[in-house]
Amino acid sequence: MAEFGPDSGGRVKDVTIVKPIIYGNVARYFGTKREEDGHTHQWTVYVKPYRNEDIPVTLYHLLKLFQSDTNAILGKKTVVSEFYDEMIFQDPTAMMQQLLTTSRQLTLGAHKHETEFA
Image 1: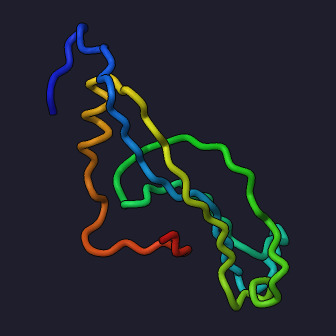
Image 2 (image 1 turned 90 degrees about the vertical axis):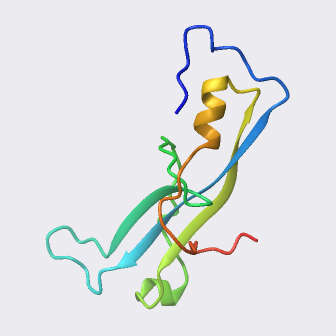
């Protein structure tokens, strides 16, 4: 990785970098209601890069906590609510440009999302 000194904070003009992301939540039925707390599903909230790159991020998202589909309620189907979005960086600094364009793949091979966004 290149070293950036104190004078490297200028903007790289006419450069736009787009980073696609997927965010959402998944509910998986336990099979029965738990005795200790009465919960019926395990919930997972996530933000992940569309191309499976390493991009740590903090995001606030309202959860879809109820599904009216009978198969989902009975645990025959996993409840998934996910969305495609893009983070757009306009005229990034030289350091930010390098960080955004040199990310590494987290896994080898094909990566599948729950929802088809193509």
